[in-house]
Every structure is written in C-alpha cells, then in structure tokens.
Image (cartoon, rainbow, N blue to C red):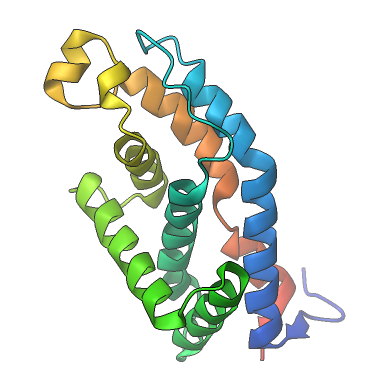
Length: 179
C-alpha cells in the first residue's frame, strides 16, 4: 500500500537530538531494572549489590552499541555526520572533550567486539560487556567462575532486558527521511 503523504523530513541535527535524548531517557528509566536483574539473579551465589548510581559503564556500553549500528541503517555519509553530531551532543551533556569522548566510545566498541567474538550480535555484546565491566564473574558458582564465562541463563535474561536499550532504526526510517 502506498503512502499518501510520504515520510516526514527531518534534519540530521534533530535526528542526533532525538537519538541522544531518547537513549538517555531510556537509560535513566531502565537502569534500575537492569540493576534488579543483576542483583537478584538466582545464578549468583551472592548478590553483586550494584548501585543504581553506578551507571557510567552501562551508559557507555549502551551508546557504544547503538552508535555502532548507525552505518548499517544510514548511507551517503549521513552515518558519519550523524555520529559526529551525536558525540558532540553527548560531550556537552557530560561536559567532556568531544575527542576524548569519541575515543572512549571507540574503546568501548572495540571492547564489545572483543568480549563477543566471534559473534557480531551487538545485543549479546552489550550483555557480555556488562558482565565484564561490572566484574560479575566473581559472584557465580564455581563451575562458571572457573570457566570465566557468564552463566547462559543469566546472559539470556540480561539479553532480553537489554533489547529495550537498542534504538529501533527500522521503525525510525519508516517514519522519517533524513535531509
């Protein structure tokens, strides 16, 4: 079925604003749930007692993963321009140097690729990244602790929760045309 009015045109700067604000809002609202998933996990012998204020690594993981998806959904150099706008906006939000933030995000992207190798699924990478950054291995039973690998049941539950933190580019691209 054809659309009568077509897609709404939206400027790159607005896309970057929406992206940053919606992901920050999702993180602020959703991180307490992730903390609950981690702290209440029956797979751990003792609770890691992650605090709801310990959000920095989580925020960087979520942004690194979401930014890594941009080239898959945008073309014609829009991916680079929008990524730069996003990092610029984030640097102002966090009051850090833009180049430093860009390097930190790239480091996190490389970290996520490394912990999830050989898979390229960024959702799984986020969960494994959280497992590593929050040092959760020490809270597992001896079997998984000795393997230095997350319990697959815990990882599956975390994957399901982390799915809520991925930007839905398909839906966005159906509604908007970036100009």
